[in-house]
Amino acid sequence: MAANPLFLREEEIRQGIELLFYAYRDFTAEADAFLDKLGLGRAHHRCLYFIGRNPGLKVSDLLAILRITKQSLSRVLGDLIEQGYVEQAPGLRDRRQRLLSLTEKGAGLERDVFELQRSLIARAFRDSGAEAVDGFRQVMLGIMEPGDRTKFLQRHGRRKGPQGV
Image (tube, rainbow, N blue to C red; front, side, top):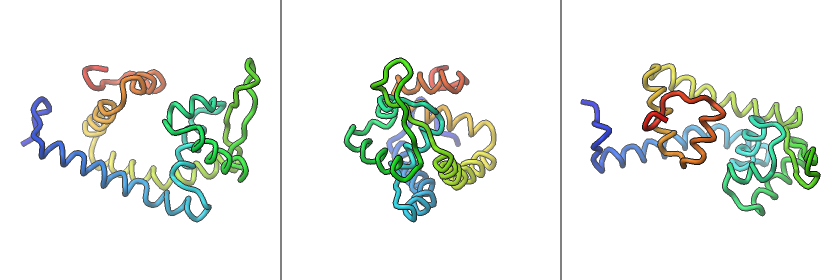
C-alpha cells in the first residue's frame, strides 16, 4: 500500500532520510575515487559542474549556489585554475567581477565525471519509469530552499512540482 503523502509516519520519514544518505554515498563514490586520483575532491567537482553548466558564471553566483565561505571557494578555485581546469576573466561591465569558465581540459574532466554519474541516474530513471522520475523531481524540488527552487525552475522549465510549482 502506498504511503499517503499528506500523513507520513516518523518511520517513513526516517526511511526517506536513510535512502538519501545511501543514495548520495553511492552516487558520489565512483566520482570521488576518480577525482582523488587527480588530487581533487567533491568541492572541486561541484565547482566544475556548475561552472560547466553556466559558462561565464560570476564568482559571487557560484558562492551563492555552493553556500561555502569565500575562503573555501578561493582555495578550490585556486586549485582548479592552477591545474588548468578553470579560467577566469574580468566582467564586461564591471572589471572587478571574475567570470568563470571551464577550459577544454576542465570540460573534459567534467564530462568524465558526469559520465560516471550519468549511468547511475539513467539506470535508476529507466528502471523506475516516468511517473517515478516525475515524483523524484517533485520530492527534490520540495526539499530545496524556495529561492533556489524558483531559480532552478526558471532555468529548467516549470513542470509540475510541489504544490503545483
